[in-house]
Structure formats: structure tokens, C-alpha cells
Length: 91
Image 1 (cartoon, rainbow, N blue to C red):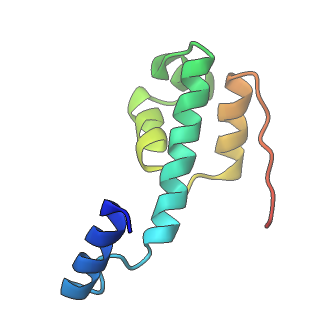
Image 2 (image 1 turned 90 degrees about the horizontal axis):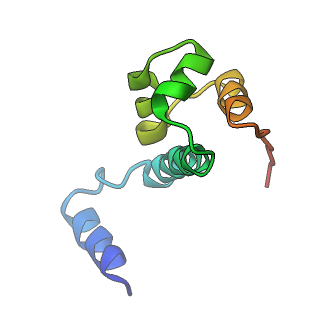
Image 3 (image 1 turned 45 degrees about the vertical axis):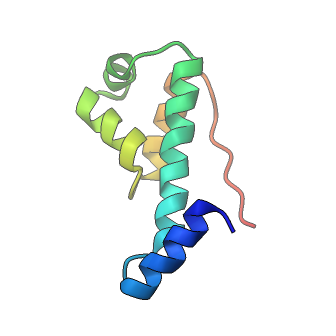
């Protein structure tokens, strides 16, 4: 058992609600990391993406760090600004 799994188990025993929705939050976190990584690989700054999306750097930062409730149209614009496309898959 990994340290994270041990921590989760101990914390869940102390406060069962703590990990409620963890898996969903993890997926949105991963999305933000993927967006940030793609931006960095493209050599663009948050300011450059923000200008392309006609928004602010703080909005781009929130997308990359929290990635919650992002509209598909926003993801498509973000990808287009990077010269990429979004691929959606249902598993």
C-alpha cells in the first residue's frame, strides 16, 4: 500500500466525507495539468493564451489549476490557440 493510500485510509476513517468526490476532482485536476503541459510544450504563456481567448491571465490560471466546469467550447478555443484539437472519448 502506497503512502497516499495509507493516508487516504486513515483520513477516511477519521472523516468519511473528506474523500467524497475525490475521483471526480482528480479527473478535473488531471485535465488542468494536461492543458498546462500542452501550453508549455507550445511555448506559450498564460498571457498569450488569454489574449487569444479574449480573457485574462487569471482565468487561464484557474483553468489550469482547478479545471472545474470548463465548457467544451472553451477547451476547443484553448486547444486551437495551441494549434491542437480536442479529442473526446467515452469509455
